[in-house]
Length: 107
Image (cartoon, rainbow, N blue to C red; front, side, top):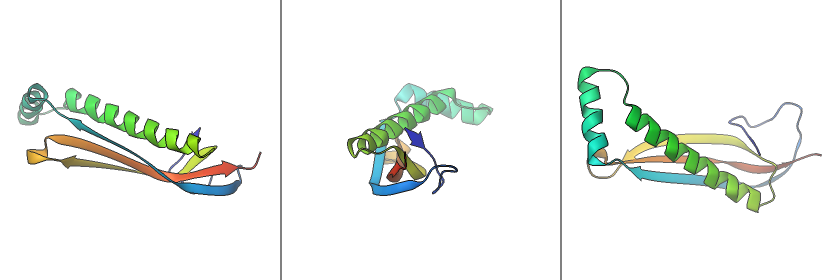
């Protein structure tokens, strides 16, 4: 399925705008990752554990959005917006939310 953050796709004509589709994923970070992330913040550098979790959450959110678009019979999703948030007590959870418009293209 074609997915893009743009509202138009070069060379493809949208024939039907089906509906807004969303995908969300919230993942908790366990205590070991929290401690490791804190040490990395103090020492400097990147926190691979957090990056891996954020990537996992993003993949889940995109898969959920795409599944909803397929259920509508969509050929693609345009105008995708990706949001990242830290939620919960003391930022203990990470949320990724994606949304876009499910569309059909001229064949």
